[in-house]
Image 1 (tube, chains in turn brown, orange):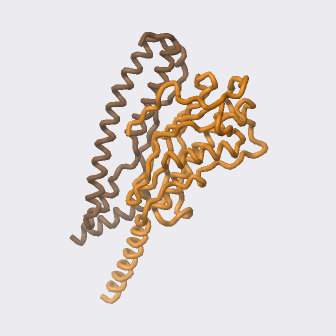
Image 2: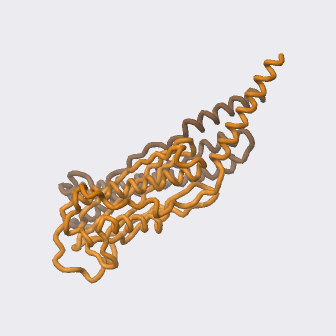
Image 3: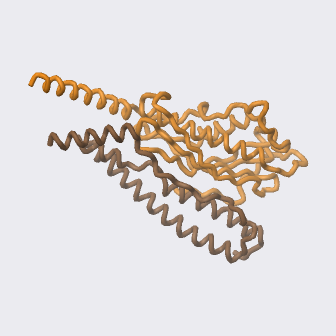
Length: 119
Length: 208
């Protein structure tokens, strides 16, 4: 028990000193080079792919939020609580990606309208 | 034997000090980002000027994606605070034209990437800025990622340091947005419009 608490203490100190860096995220750009040259078919295809990807990210985002809630409750546990707190994910990767994709689709929909594509 | 006991006491003392520092770093109530701390000051005289058509012709129409801060959780940036900071930054740069404007801005805060905790905290703000021309066509659609590192020297208490990092990342984001505005070529406004357009060409979606 004594040895375990020593290990946990060292882990806590190292994490405290280094910090739990957020997961890096690069959201999709709203406007991209070559957008104006996309055909109606290509625009439709991109919109559909994006819709599916956004749904997936929204689902994963909810899972992360539920996981964080559970970890927050666990963090109140003596000794191992600190490890649970360290595992909380505040990087918002899924939310950022989902919202970026939805904005990208807004742009593609605007281009579709501008090109006079059928709905 | 006596020496071992002394070493043990020193180790225990060190543990208590580090544990106290960690607790202090983690403790405290979170508060929302301060709008005044996110404002970008007036640009230097030597800075590249904004296009003439944009001067005194812009306003912030919609800000979405922000989150209210739960005091028992991490500091966040809310829509009102972000909108106030963006509007004040436009004022400082001589771009504001309230209440009516020719070039409305919609900003969507995609999210803040925050660490769980740490001594030096880096927060990255991800924001989509949409600027529209008087015709309704987009003038600028920019996705801006802006990291900011808040060091231990900025704030000792962890929640306060996270708040500083949030504010710094939004301030950096607005600064980068203003830089992008300088490179735009807006159509000249023929006559002053009666009011800002009521809505974007398509609604801004939100996942939460």
